[in-house]
Length: 172
Image (cartoon, rainbow, N blue to C red; front, side, top):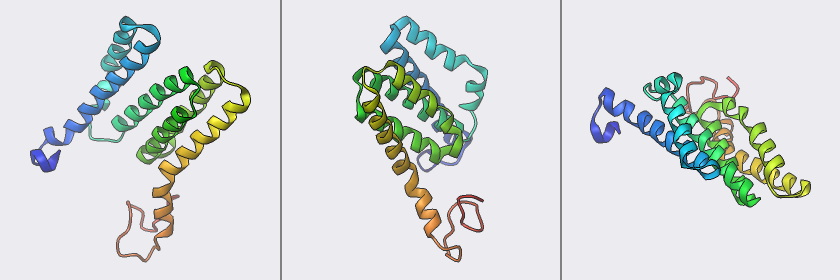
């Protein structure tokens, strides 16, 4: 947005605000799918009016993207539950993997709950749940692991370091 609009506070914060609007929309769509439009409006309003969300979507930090990706993961989990679908579980894994790239381990807080919801509510057998869960974990590792692998494989003496680490280590 800075390239298009020029360097300004507005251009820097516009993506954060758009991610906030998108998060409200995703929460609305997710809740509406199961409980109706009125409940969807309430869910979207709760997200929009929560003070921490209102603050988070007005600062230039990765929390806005993380929240959007976790909301998309919840939406995909609901779709996976409805269809007992390995494809949608892999989509959940991709959203979680992208969330890992956004803010590392923080996104993993929702993983047990997405898996438990799928186990309890999806019309599937335990064996299929295990297979679907392993596919989701594989998608998560692939969607996050490519960057981790690149960082690990680039030697520390490389002239183009990745990130802020002087040792080019994922762990530091």
